[in-house]
Image 1 (tube, one colour):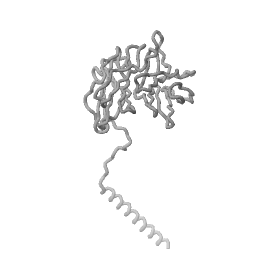
Image 2 (cartoon, helix red, strand yellow):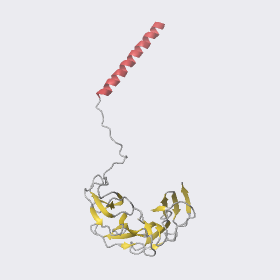
Image 3 (cartoon, rainbow, N blue to C red):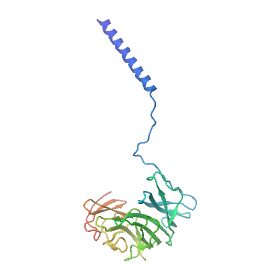
Image 4 (spheres, one colour):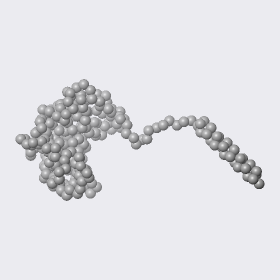
Length: 274
C-alpha cells in the first residue's frame, strides 16, 4: 500500500511539474504587450523654460475659444530678475488640438504698461459671450491694481483697460484664474491688500471682495473680511456652491469663509485647517 501511495504521489508531482513547465513555455511564446502609462498621469505638453532675458514664466490662465482652440495667456518676465516686481509683459500661446500641442512663439497681448510690470492673468467667459481678461498693472509697492480688458471677437482684439479698483489706493493682489461670475451674473474678484501709500508692507493682507453687476465696467467693494487671528492671509480665491453661495479660501493656512450675501459682507469664518 505504501509503495502504491508513493507511486501516485510521484505521478502527481510529475504531472504538475509538466503542467507548470508548459504554462511557462506558453507564456514566453505570447507576444509582449507594450507598457503604457496610465491615462490619468499628467503629461507635460508645454514647457516654457527660462532663458536669457526671460528668467521666469508664470501666473497664467486658459480659455476655450469658439473655434475650439485653447488660448493661454501668461506672465512673461524679462531682464535678469525673477522677482514679482521685475519687468514682465503678457504673452499668449494657442492649441488647436485640445491642449496636446501648442504654438512655438509668443504673441504679445499686453506690453509692459506698468512702471514695474503687468502680471497674473484671469480669463473668464462672460454670460453675454464676451471674454473678460483681468491682470495686475504694477507701478510700485504702493500701486498695484487689477485691470480689465474685454474681447467681443474671440480674443482677436481687446478693449482699452479699465481699472477695477478706484475707491482706494494700494498694492492689491489678484491671483491668476481667480475671478468668477455667479449664476445671477455678478462678477466676484477676491483681492489681498498688502500696502497703502505711506504705510508699511504687511505679509498678512487685508482681504476684500470686489463685485460688478455690469460685466466689469464698474466695481464696488465688500467690507474688509473680519480676521482676529494671527494667520497670514494671502492669495484669496472663490468658488460658487450649488446653492449659489460663494466660498472663499486663503493660502498659507486654508480657511473657509461662507459668503452669505453676494459679496457685500464676507462673514462667518467657519474654520481653518493648519
